[in-house]
View 1 (cartoon, rainbow, N blue to C red):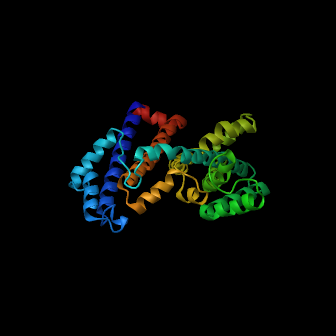
View 2 (view 1 turned 120 degrees about the vertical axis):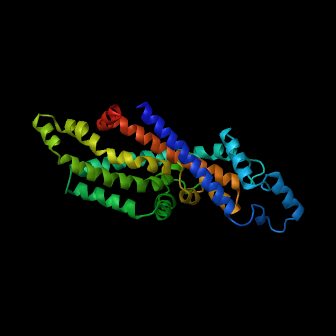
View 3 (view 1 turned 90 degrees about the vertical axis):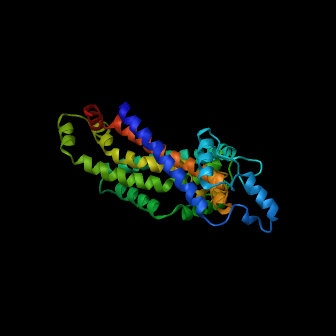
Length: 309
């Protein structure tokens, strides 16, 4: 198991390095510089700014310097914000995106798994059809459409929740639903199909013939095997939810990290682009790493394979 974890850690580090390198090169390949957007800036001031931030140095020197600073936890200053560094921006706004993502993840897992399990156990009944209609709607309606609909009905007309902004728990409900609905639908459909497949296996019939009650058969034998494909997609799905989405944060006026990522691309703020890309990539890669570890803990066949190696 230690060898398995070590190999995955090495892959994690190499993947993150590749992402940083490609982002750095592509970012500098765009014509112009971050200060061209300032308009009619005097040439002397522009030259001093470029020199101050080290943009006049050869690209390999900038790359090595950035990697060195990054390894020391310094993601550099922000060209757009004179009072905040990239570290400050991430520390200030990641908790907002993370809270939204965690609530969306809770909603998607709780309701997605529940709908999938119930639909499979009530196969070809009204409950099954209703659950799958909800799942199809969740997959079909993008959050850019769902979010305004939630605001219109539950905030503007029914006045159950605030329309936008961020503060109390009530402010988080609608954006969490809008963000987690698609993931919930994907999990529900996948769990239902896996459950139906597992319920038709011989060992399920054997378990029933041994006298196990329905709860034991479903919980001990069916769900544990059916949930494996769900865990497979949980890595990138969780990363997408935990980092939030730019659209949801924009619609609900949420002060998350996504807003700064979009602004950094528009402003060509190199350090913020790199810093937010590194953060998003690290979350995605880390979630995939934890999914690999979870596989080894849940699936006995993977444990056996590791022992044999």
